[in-house]
Length: 387
Image (tube, rainbow, N blue to C red; front, side):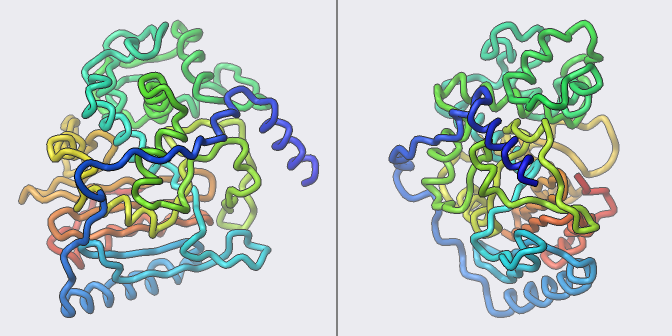
């Protein structure tokens, strides 16, 4: 164990790009006109009781019975209905998880990356219809645009799988720039689909989007996320993981309570690597639903479906998964999985309901959050909503 800690500290000191971890705590830019987080409508006593009972039953029947370790929060109209913390930050320790315990969001991190890109789009600093090569010099894949990266229609292969397959040294930690360079140098070896032909969920897309954010904004991705989202919204327990955070980042565990090891893929951000809490994520949701952090036209673009090749109500927008019901109602959500972390961030727009589950011990039952959807309306679904 001592050798492992020494290894992480050594990498943190010498690894390229580790300067990203030192976020300049500049005073965040004021949000336009008023604070982005406004008071949401009050929930009636009857609504509160009905939603509380459904949430409590879900917790007891689905999560508690499966030895859930993590954080669970249900809110309606911005008001917390049900909140529960179970387990420990370190299973063999005494640090019970609480409202300040930041857990790895896994792919829920993509919602922040996508909205960061759309913020730059709103500001006129980039165009989502531009090819990625406009912002990533030397990028050799024609037809891949910022938009096809956002909606997973780029046709690019997943770096999580192909880098090792093509000989990447597992002893060498991968950074975002490495992902880009790998795509450039291995173009002739990679199987790449025609852009915008079909949906293919791919972490590579969001690793590249993080680089585009850095290129356009002129600041490291962690700093951009902090200054534009975390600081203005008061998300005080949220951060983007970099190597210097190795000592404070809570680990995750497999279903046998064995700690998951740090791997060579754990330094890439944009597709993952945001740590947060259920309460901080509620601030994020409230700002999106009730604030003026984004123009409505931007949100409409983010929540539109772009892939209709397959039958069913599942679709993907710009950084958001969704269920599109025949009555034109939508559930906007994203799930995540990385090592022992399973996550759900679901938003029922019409009924202003939010379901957030963050787990630090592998538990597939977390994805059964869809069983709670009908408590807020006619939202039953048989679609697979796992990550």
